[in-house]
Length: 164
Image (cartoon, rainbow, N blue to C red):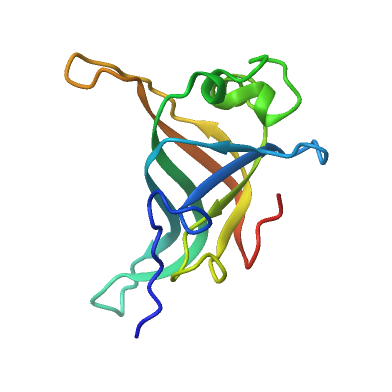
């Protein structure tokens, strides 16, 4: 049997989970982001391309990566606006909106899910900035939904357990 990663929506200890904390605050216990609709992990290496007079095809080499994590979430008032909003020192105080407007460097931990029982899943972790907020609501979709991008500074790390 293959070892597929199964995010198991609604199943505790197995479901995909995203947590944020303020990178400069080691005492911050983090904020779990609820109501995720989808998650996209981007790890896109840039390339340098050149042509040579003695070749019929272009040459390419991989250069630095542009990494980001994208999600869409149904807005939860406390998680989105935080307990204090702007000027907070923890992820729970800032909320997603405060982290974005304050341009606060955040540490993220994404539990990708598991093969079956919550004991063998992997975490993607790193640091980045919350960007790309664009809350929308309509008569056909009567709850606020927003895309969220974490623009990652540096590399992803892969861990067997979350660091917070």
